[in-house]
Image (tube, rainbow, N blue to C red):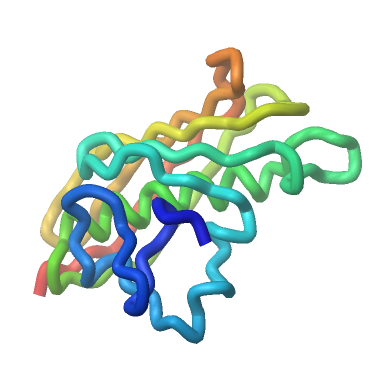
Length: 151
């Protein structure tokens, strides 16, 4: 597993000032995380601007370009992690709605998602994720709404 993907209780390898309670994965489940299978790497852990990348290779649909569901996985990963940081250290997050608009296909390289909050309230948080290809062209715009509880 990439050192910047998710932290496990055994390795404790999350980057930066991320709250362990949000990213800790039981060791028995570490190799079953979708973020690792998709090749997603989180490159910025700022709750106001979460950034991650994902390779096109390995995430294609039968026509050869990036699968739309892969965009959804990247968007939900970034939005859920950002919401988790918002409610840390003891809060809870549950996704309510995800919508994705696909603008163009990505056929190679990596895509980059930038997640920013649109609204962060006591019960609901909404994030926008802009996904671009290796040349900086928009490929997908997604919006994720989460139920949040700061407990």
